[in-house]
Length: 73
Image 1 (cartoon, rainbow, N blue to C red):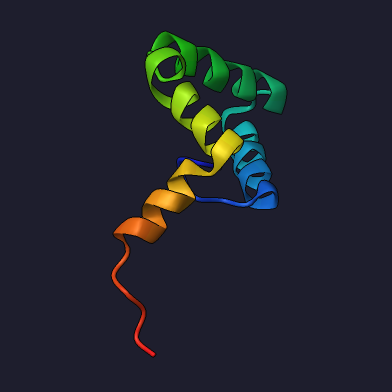
Image 2: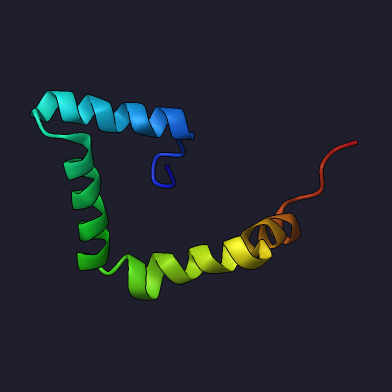
């Protein structure tokens, strides 16, 4: 969802599409994705802490507001 900017339904549909295309179970594809996130270092020092900050205090939203140009009125 995060990588492709998809909602829940679209993300699941993407997993189903890959499942049908590769003749693999959806849960196997999802497990591979999670395993590769850990293997590629996207959870420990990268993605996970950033996600935790966003989830706990909305840091990304605040940064976006602070850095966004003023809206025309």
